[in-house]
Length: 115
Length: 110
Image 1 (cartoon, rainbow over the protein chains, first blue to last red):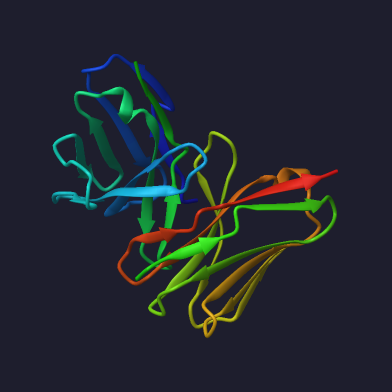
Image 2: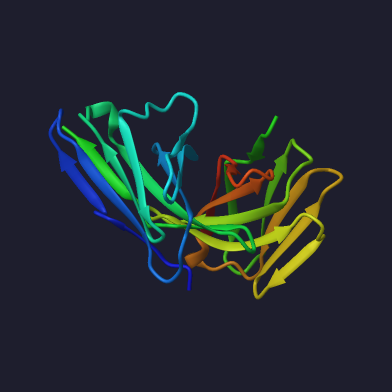
């Protein structure tokens, strides 16, 4: 149980385009999902908390107009990187929260490369 | 503040036990977790411990929590080549979010 999927697993795009990444909880409902970014050989950096039916809460320093988050259902959250630039290239990982016991289950990640 | 620290590297001979350590700075922890990340993959939840527990064992994994010293450890018995990965300690400080350590890269020596 507690499986989280992400799509796509990797994407290459041109500078200036927008890219949408999906995060799905496959066998459970998640009112809260999280989006992280991971740079090579580094730990995870929390970008935002995605709550079903309400606006996402962004961490300090994360541009909400650049990284659009939508959590329209209890099993799906999306992250859209708008007007992507090479510095947005990274590994993006989502997680879905199970409240009891309070745990997060992670997706397999999406590698974004912006040319 | 909420800070979690780990050593960056650990090398262990195949068949020996691996002990990965983690320290944290805030005493308001609720749950503490160990995740495993293999190259190019997401994080796999290995185990977790509630802050009012001292120890938890799950097959080859043993988690020890010393709340007084704010120290968490993960022991992997009979370490195998498939255990090679980066292991992250994560702490829930009571606000739904997880604070991650830097990760410890475990290398198995044949």
